[in-house]
Image (cartoon, rainbow, N blue to C red; front, side):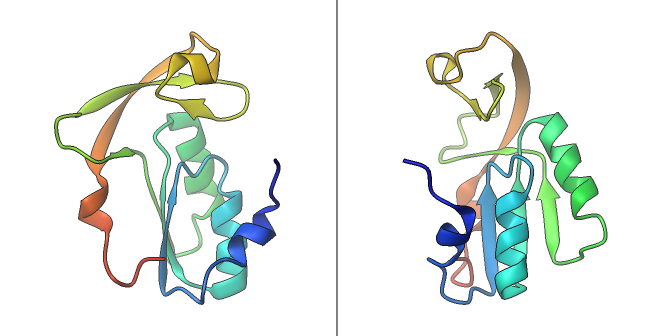
Length: 117
């Protein structure tokens, strides 16, 4: 089932801050910012896509791009991401690719606050 970004954005209730986990090209963050003008932190672990997001939002002080994968445990310091034509995954079977990139991680809990939507 394919869902339009605008439909996902409508699920939010005027957030002050948002996390875009797996920012890819930054389209979701762009739509969210156009609708609400909130502060957004984009997490994109792959260097190619993180650079695209950094360039895309270079003049927007409300959108910050962090090149890391978010994890739920501090036992993972680095992970291998399998790159595919569309998207990526920590699981080779989902990505259906042998092209990989070693990426650093950070704990999701470090970024969770009551203001985040």
